[in-house]
Length: 121
Image 1 (cartoon, one colour):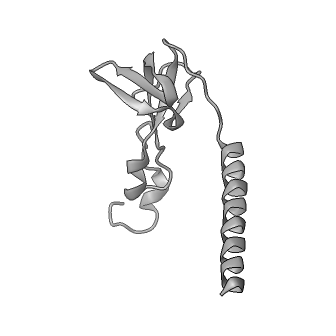
Image 2 (cartoon, rainbow, N blue to C red):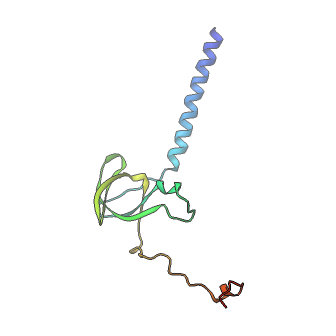
Image 3 (cartoon, rainbow, N blue to C red):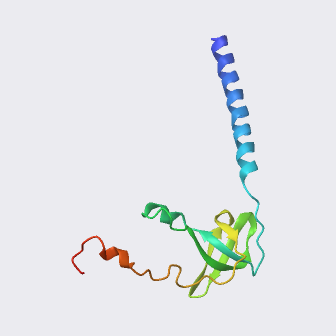
């Protein structure tokens, strides 16, 4: 019974050591982003991953930071809606200009489309 208790204590200590190491590795990979009031940011939208479309971007915005709360919470404002709060880990700084309304121009069919016998010649 004593050996069983010693093995249990040793397993418990090894578990604690493992948890500390994995936490240290995880924390080293987190980027500490600092946001100030008035910054323009993009918001990561994780809901889009369930829709089809591999090339669709998951970042929306830009939004403006209106308030920064402790522990990483940030309040954002949007042009046509109410302000809302998000976790700062879902944000990244936006340095570009205005996003164009039409991302993909209208594509025109090439004249070679009729070469393969669609019956319109």
